[in-house]
Image (tube, rainbow, N blue to C red; front, side, top):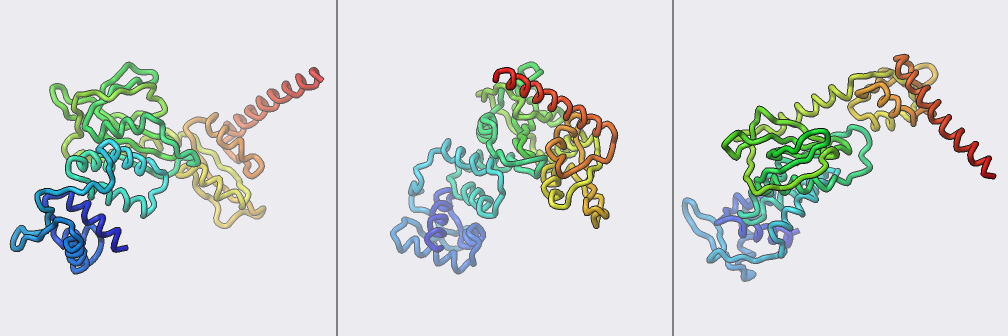
Length: 330
């Protein structure tokens, strides 16, 4: 709608010394003549903007005038962007909203917002994704990224550490921090000491006043892909072949994500489909498969079948004991 475009055009003018019709057209994804007409419409409606002609010309607000359409502070803008980046679905509307929000905000706000947007990843499944709530520490780490600050982490099983947060992202329901200490005597993170931390194992965090920035040319997509590949290796150390009822194949594959692979096409004579699934340990794989016994049977290896049987025996013993206690009380 044109009214939406005019508001976006005004926000862009507020955030820049000047803007050309061609630049506005690229931002709003419209033609140059349409962008020029929008700028003229703003001027005719009383907005104090004027064009400058010739090389280096464009449209600008008279005297640096500002119209605060939102009343948002820098902290509120960062919080809004954090909420958008933590959402589980990267819909076209949400992506467009983040892009427009970052581009339209005034210059002092924009750099931190761009860092948050670039350093936050919402990745593919690793199991179920019904619970979309990010741990509270995620927003705190994103604010540290926005402000170029170091953080003090209390990480389970390790001494307190001071790091520069470089990326924060999720894989399925699990959130990860990629961070590194600074180079000695500098504010820049040491790329040779980058580590991955699970957010659910961060027992405490504190944003510090000391500055901490990413190394020049830090390749976030490559670093994230390497982390995923490394964790995939841990998760896929144990494999099992499972015969699955046709109606449950898709659900089981969705549950295991990239750790599931179809082996049969078409199904066997019984209509079942063989699927290979993976996990990092035998007992973990057995626990994940225990809820699928009505729809899936483990064919191999014997270790997983044994682990499932032992798990079933422990469950049966537990509930036999509860049933006996209940009868005695009666």
